[in-house]
Image 1: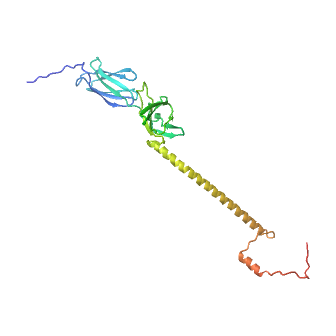
Image 2: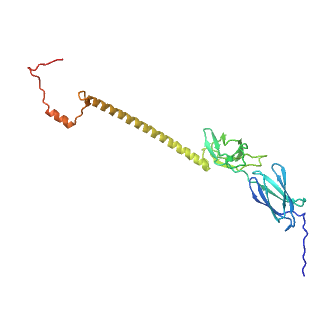
Image 3: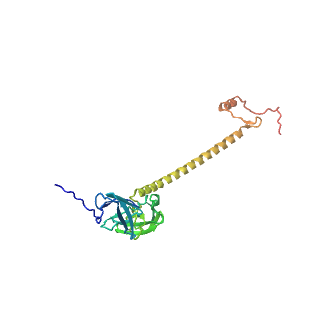
Length: 294
């Protein structure tokens, strides 16, 4: 013997297995099951979203006949905290959960440049990779002194750099830069952190590369300067020698210029030697040869 029993649907039961499928910066996907299996009609759900930071509420209506319901909550804020309540439209028992949206990313390429009596923090604009970030929101900077074990808030800025002064010798500092927190410091961006000591050497790769580039520049620039000076002196010496040789040749050519022929006459050493041997030696003048003095 057997008997068939059909359970009467109870619309006062809460939705089952409420959970988050995916959480992003500006939306969250939630999922739940109907209060009972295989609903035979559309069921109206009320999804209440309470912003725990702003202290505001929003209610959305979802209608579905499926046993499993998936819904996307939109227009959330990065780094926000929310309390989600799902129940049937007749205000039956509820199911609830808390979700935290993904905060804004940390700024990229944080590096340090050391000046005489202060340092400068530099980073890339967060708006380059975060469409939800507006530069008017700005950044806030924190500093941690490992020797004193103290964290200090240095301030905020809407620029992509920040000046830090009054650092103590022998102290190691960690600087962090993040999107400025909103509403009592509860909605913040992820921080970018960089370690710095009094010698100006940071453990971050960007700071290390910057330091190495500075050291290489300090060596290369003087060497290039000396090479340029040496080349300049060499050119001057060559030019002066060229001028001297040109002047000597001009003087030598002028001394061998024949006005009768209209050109300079040069002879080899052998020719000069032969002419000297064949030329008669002048020993004197004869008395019978008249002398004419002009």
